[in-house]
Length: 360
Image (cartoon, rainbow, N blue to C red; front, top):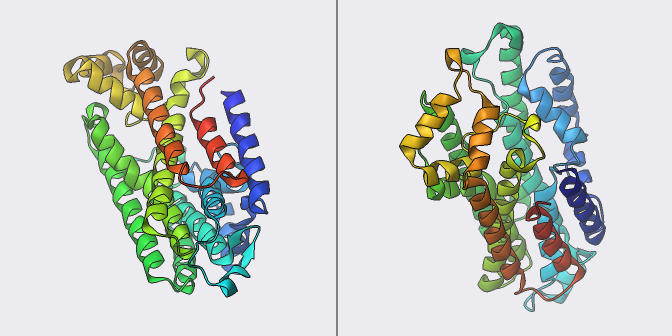
């Protein structure tokens, strides 16, 4: 809803003041590089086609509503909330700006670069499924080539910066998060490519595992790595990991719920059949009844009437179950924050949870 979106933007802009600068500048250093401006020139050649890379590129420049910089911002806030550890050397303290070490700021940028690289990689189209209205085949192939190259470029940049942190455990954590993302995207794509994906029976426990890999692992492991950079003990590292994990799970549930709680059904939008409310609806309804609903919502030629299906899902218990799950993860994130001393940064992290668990 508009009020929820504006509330989220407000929470984010207040949080940005606490960490010392708007996180939207984080990717700019990379975006202003010569190599990337060359890629941007190539992307312009796709104008007039329906290649998804165009939307990704627009989103990176204009998207304040969904705030693509959320991950880097959380890393900075949790770094500030934890402060320096008791074991950190005094000389190490001089390296702090606004209560955050420069290595932690670099880590926040690395987290954003990795997230952006994977967003760009996800914008690769399946050439076999193209329709003539999507654009010329050679344009779409060119778009794919640019998406692969620019995604790889961002990822390579992130890995170089990661090595410069000179911390083996941090390199290990972030590398494993990149592995998780690859695995998560593999699951997403294998679900989508199956003929019967409309009736794909994944169940909520499988959904949680897949979403952890594709959405939560990067933030959870980056929060933990930020604690490692400040030499915090294993317990604080684990609490930071838990906050990142549960915060991003509730963030994902919040966005999955939007098509089902926004106003009237005339606002109907195509939603993912692998989104949480649909998975829960399918699980609560039972497999046979769900397949029947799918068939009833299919037109001639197997086209899906999403409005009809959306109404059927809204009438079931999947939506309220997804809201409950969103609150559950939000509460777990808030519990993890109790290990940090009260501060402005901790309050900002709490406010981010309140913003994604609010549905009015």
